[in-house]
Image (cartoon, rainbow over all chains, first blue to last red; front, side, top):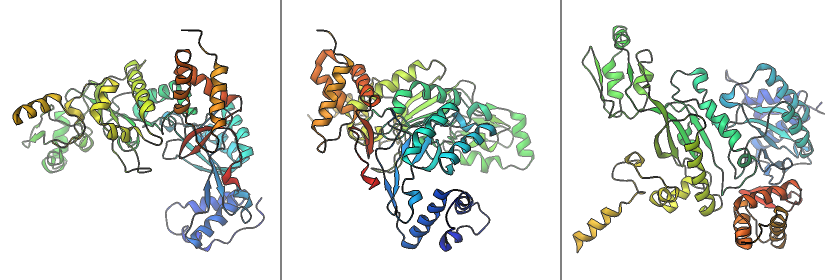
Length: 400
Length: 82
């Protein structure tokens, strides 16, 4: 039990209003957990002084693993002794974040016993995040987690915990089984997940369709996004129902198509499927009438990252279409080649997207043995990556 | 080509590299792999280097650390804990 309740006038402001409040949750934990109580005190102090009071650790972990624990220490340990250590543990989440209520209770029991009782459900990596424990509690927590069938996730320069949307488990648009692939990749890359061996982090994120609910295109070094290569499935009677119910199909669907590949004459919707860029807008607008085609698979994109060391990057097309079915041999071979080239030549803290920018997409493709295709061109006339030798030959002939 | 090096030999060589450059250089797994494959030539491939790193870590002689990127170091007291 905490010694005394802390006064937190500034944090109290963040409890006001209708929305859920993290302060309310920390206070609730603080009633029975000294760590959560000191966290309140240190956070109030940070709000007063407008400065953070955490220090980043770099050594703590569990035996044999190089990831899964992020060391945190207070720089005010004498004032807030119960958060002098406040390490984070990343727990590898099940694909699609499916849990039973029973297992959630058991996870929370473990964390109340060994840590602050505070969690993030879930962190931006996808992992279930346990917030705040002491160094000596790491191994006992890990032991109880593994007994329950859970494992730590990734952190540092390793394969980060693969994450995905709920895919075929709950969504009609899934073009491949994201959860099966996520489970497969998690198991296949166990060594790389727990033992950092790369220049920097490597993230896989799997989205079942181009709606990209896990934002794979913005956050993952390899974004695997479901798509199709035949025609959009159309139910003309259902389109007529939408029109009859008052939907302005011309304004709300056709005019918003980025590829301008649709026409509506008031009775029939005509789609030029060859020009479709699979943006999903029309399907999202009329889900009862339109659906992705039947020849489904995924597009593999490479190189996204958030702005940590350098600026943010969106991933760009590497493989326009691939059928993703077990045993995923083609995908694993591709990833192996990329890892080899990047590990061999990447600089410290250089994400694969930055590596590609540095060496050039043309050189990168040559190194991994992938032929350039028009789909890799992000914007017409401004792709800086691919140079065709024939172009230079013609150019030099013109000048001579 | 002679007999391949043993995991222990490669692991010991890695440990020496890390120990001799303590305080001057931090080693990443990729750096260690490059160093020992160069040192042992055909007697050590990348898989052998990987096993040697695992041996180093699981024996407790070295630990993974994180300071921006992930490194392999001889265990020492956490500076941030002071």
